[in-house]
Image: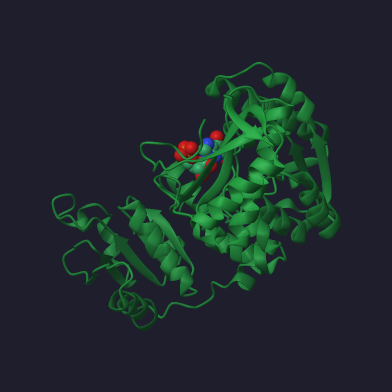
Amino acid sequence: MLAVIDSELQLSMILARKARELEVYSQVVPHNVTKEQLSALEPEGIVISGSPDPLVCPDVSDLIERGILDLGIPVVCVNCKAPGVPSIHYVPGSYEWEQAFSEFLFSVCSCRKDWTVQGFIERSIKEIKSLIGDGRAISGLSGGVDSSVASRLVQEAIGDRLTCIFVDTGLLRKGEPDDVRRIFGEGFKMNLKMVDASERFLTALKGITDPEEKRKIIGGEFINVFQDEAAKLRDEAGFLVQGTLYSDVLESQAHAGTGGSRVKSHHNVGGLPETVQFELVEPLRYLFKDEVRAIGRELGIPHHILDRHPFPGPGFGVRIVGEINEESLEIAREANAIVEEEIRRAGLYNELWQAFAVVLDIRSVGVSSGMRTYERPVVVRVVTGHDGMTCDWGKLPYEVMEKISSRITHEVKGVNRVVYDITPKPPGTIEWE
Ligand code: XMP
């Protein structure tokens, strides 16, 4: 096991992931970790990740408890300096750097190679079993990567004592509820509760055009629906499964805890009231996204779910400008499906961060079979990037754009024009609302 003492979060995450790629379990710990906390993790090696700027951090040993360097565990600094501690210079993508890092792990620390997908699944199932005992759990299954993998893992551990709740907001992609029912209900034989709340969402959104108000309504309704369902099961189920990832933990809490179980944390879930208290089960809490995908593959989750582009929580709620109603939703579902289909057909899906259609609430003049039309435009938004924080607009081949445009104007009722968004982020955001 490798402990990464963090004074530069981005670099710490890179180092932790690199170690895991080399099958060594790694954990990021805060720079103010105590000697006792660190020893409790029983690391075979310690890496101090720090800023390469000597003005920011002239001597990284000032940041950490001195005794840590005297524990007798091999230590190395990456990009930072500490007297008497060897250092490796991190150069992204360099063979020499990777060699030096790997030599530290295996020749200096003799780290065990025990971080494998199969090993993780076995350990995780054991931990979940011991946490839940003969109790029951519920899980909000959205059909996205994280909730799907977390739910499958827990199902492996406790079988049909897990109930998955799928809320159909009506704002989801074409065929999504059926896909979830087919894959998780029929395929994996999960105890799946499908809640069709689309009418409830449409009613709450009637006449609303302000983007922030829409988001608030969608978020609030989602909690209400989930809370109603969770409350019905509360007497039997004491545990709630969440697909929290390691990057969420590191970013939101600044630092992960240095001890404790790998699947458990005790606190209530944002949005659920005191009366609906659950103990959280977070089996992905120490995993990075690519590891979650690998585990999902091992658990048999189809790759179109694991490799799917991010889809925002409020769904088409942030992709329809103006009022959300049956008409605009039908256009969003059909146009988005065409964009996804054509991008997949062109073999470009995995190269793009996101690709979707946005429905506008203006109308423009067109002509069809010699007749004047006055219908909506659809915006095609395609972006490249790695994290959604910044992005560039995707330079699709003209033939792909042409196919998308032609199919949308011919197949989607109420649309007579397709435009292409050529704005990077910043200044544009990825979603339109
Ligand atoms: P923006 O539009 O802010 O999006 O450039 C950045 C990334 O975040 C996704 N996104 C959301 N995801 N709930 C989500 O779960 C939201 O309300 C939300 N808004 C944006 C967006 O799809 C992109 O990947």
